Length: 41
Image (cartoon, rainbow, N blue to C red; front, top):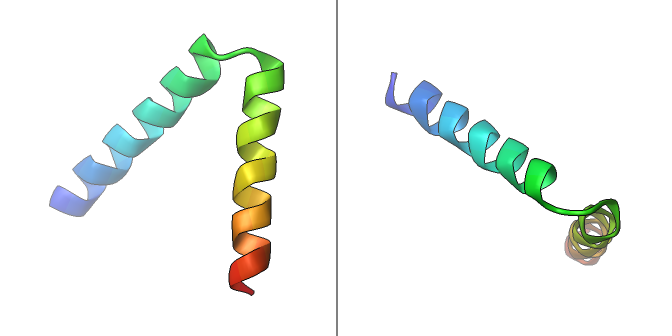
């Protein structure tokens, strides 16, 4: 149950970030994570 609650809160945080940020800011975040995952691989 604790894991499900943590996932639910995480989704709420992500939803809030997408709601309150502009499209450009969201794209920058996506590019940042894409580069981070690319470097790890």
